[in-house]
Amino acid sequence: MIQYIQDTEHYTEILSRMMNARRLLWIATADLKDLYVKQNDNAVPFLKKLNDLLKRGVEVRLLHAKEPGQPFRDDFDKFPLLWSELDRRLCPRVHCKLIAIDSEFVYIGSANMTGAGMGMKSENRRNFEAGILTDEPGLVDSVMSHFDNIWEGGRCTKCGRKEFCGDKIK
Image (cartoon, rainbow, N blue to C red; front, side, top):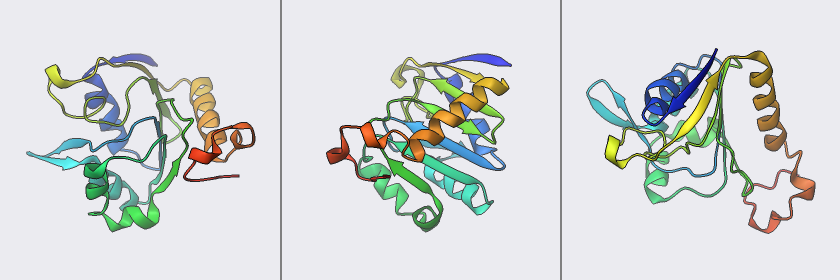
């Protein structure tokens, strides 16, 4: 399956799959802001949903390019499990937007983990986003390998931006 995802489908197709991860959820994003999702009749922080995944034993890795803003940090502080269980790395070179779910599906696209990119913003307040959701084994393996190489510091020795790196891996 290779599915083209655009605009609000990032919320309906990608976020819903992310929230149903059973084993792992890896997220690479350039920008990271407070993002809200629907839960019953309420809007809750995406970070609450990540906290719920961690409670269920899902491995969550979050790779991002810059420190998030104050609203994100305020939400983050509400969920102490994130402090100890969320695997988070900052790499100023990350510009890719990749999501791996249970080593079965990957998203490759333009949407950052922000309300305007992935969240429940109204049609008139959203970014114009596009991407691919797939379960094709070759693409899944390639995306996960690319993500893991960055995560493990495979590109750090030649980075040239270490002075901006908050999480020196190597």
